[in-house]
Length: 375
Image (tube, rainbow, N blue to C red; front, side, top):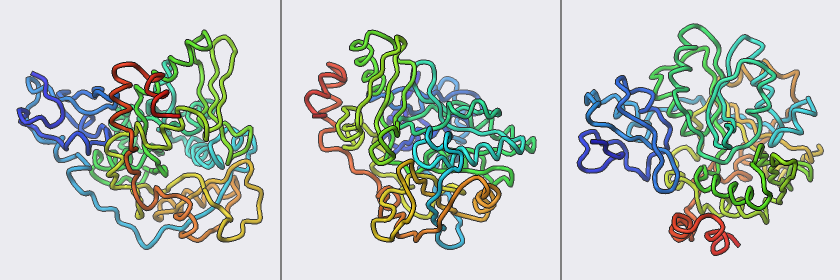
């Protein structure tokens, strides 16, 4: 018999469903494959335990970063920088200043591997590895969905134990899940956590795309959440279809972005996120430097995007310094970085219409729910 998450009948009781981040640490640690990652009624992935296979070893309980508090040791406050990639083409095709590409390229040149999020053929989001620079464009850019980790943590451990350099980029809860799974620090591992607003339901996004496919008469082949053709601060969502047609919408008026910014279909755990604060769980933190220059003058043109970089420890400092000929950076006050990024201080509150949206969405689909709650 299969039990879901923490129902009372289950002998192995993981963290409560609403607190589970879906980090997949338990899925990766299970030695007998008794845990599967399955969709719930809102489209978020979480652990299913097959008790006919489960040996009750308890490893899943020991590894869960939401049950166990893993200490984040930091020597003082992080250093904050406003930065951008000197390669204009890479910067133009990035969400903000293109610093992720700087770090990824450096690791690849050191014969290392990079794990990050990409869209799959069905426009879902998954974590995967890449070892070649020509694969980098697939992993560049923001993806506001819950990514599937798969067995990435197991793969990472294998590379680390072979002595390979590994660079992992993900949401703070995913970085925490990886650290918990590994159980120790590795000198050849570098982690990058992202300044995260929260992750959207993959099912909601999929139904949103199906709605656009019906309208444009063709399958979606690519999605750009942060098209900067109108500038970094006026970014647009751009979707390209198999028949060559394009859909573009400004983030302040577009339906899917409206629900995202109102926290209508974020994962429940995002509302109680333990990582929306300083200190950070990653060696480096990346995000947009929103509000740059509003309180302290910034004498540079920010039209093409400015990355926020937080250096959280000496390992992160080492990576940052090793790449200094590839980016332009200006040291800024930490308070300026935090003031422009609410997610560095507190988690997002659930949207007022969240429950009502899902009631309509699960019965009538995205279009009907959007018409009622995303105007």
